[in-house]
Figure 1: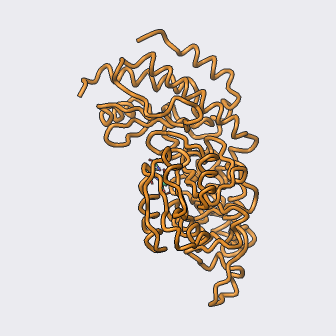
Figure 2 (figure 1 turned 90 degrees about the vertical axis):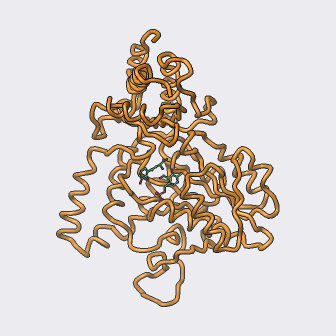
Figure 3 (figure 1 turned 120 degrees about the vertical axis):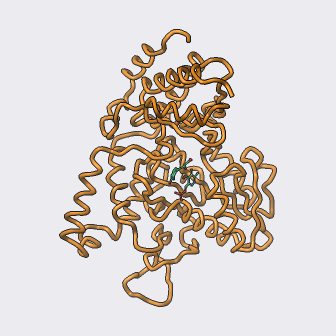
Length: 401
Ligand SMILES: Cc1ncc(COP(=O)(O)O)c(C=O)c1O
Ligand SMILES: Nc1c(O)cccc1C(=O)C[C@H](N)C(=O)O
């Protein structure tokens, strides 16, 4: 192994303006590099949830829907997420899972672009599976067909038959960042609508939904937004589409007057139209509390630290890990990199088990990918150095397959 990079890590941590945010989270001595799957717990959330359960539910009971502002939580929390993804207030509604919101968005996009000559829904060929499954069903239900396409080859695949395109901003496996502004512009040029899945970018890098004219977007909140296991996802509907957005799941809470209990459905205006049924208040208010950690934090600062962390981790891996044992699948170019590093490794399953046993928590994407997510609010440069050092130790002890 070459010279230690620990002193460099210490200097980088000392200069890190986000270093203070780590104490906002309940963390132990492990190096937690799995915030791209489940974000860490912000330390104040348990007390806030205890209040929701014991006072709001336990004492106020039904009055909490109005006096406790439970009813408006989906839009209110949407407005808290909005600045992190570059959306104005009133464009994001929180609720349901990402999968369900993919369904609303893809069907909604086709209904916004109903020309029957537009037969195709293009879907990122390397997508996280749920998006692909749901888009396929949505296409079938709307009489369209799915065309899988690598995001890098999208330009050649777009045409007069394209109704909508579903893309991931950051690829869950490789960590590749796709160029949202130029791909959205190309989709529009073809007369189609762009739907983006922000699961692996929201809270890690600037998205610019309004600025880049995205039509519809979805994302989860349990990764970089630290909302907790199964916390509700969100749906973004561009303002220009809100009046015509025709949700395939028009539940009573998206009615313009839910308590009229009318049998005729009249959709509410704005992002509320993306609601379905009764919101899952405990998860939703845990998310709302978790979003406090973003107060005063700029997403540009987060992005700068994310790139510095992943650069430094790659440098440590190159310095420590024996030649030829791992290959980065994540692009080196900053413009193409999300906030994770994916290393291909022949012995990946055994190596990840051993890393976890030694306090370096990443995850495995079968068969051979070691994933390390870098969450700038609570991961530091010493963590990156330690992760690479332990990886090198594990690999030097492991026989090659
Ligand atoms: C890109 C992407 N989309 C969707 C999901 C999951 O969707 P859901 O929240 O419905 O489980 C994930 C991760 O679980 C994901 O990485
Ligand atoms: N949503 C998850 C779950 O319920 C259990 C385990 C992992 C997850 C994930 O989020 C996986 C993640 N989207 C991924 O990128 O692999």
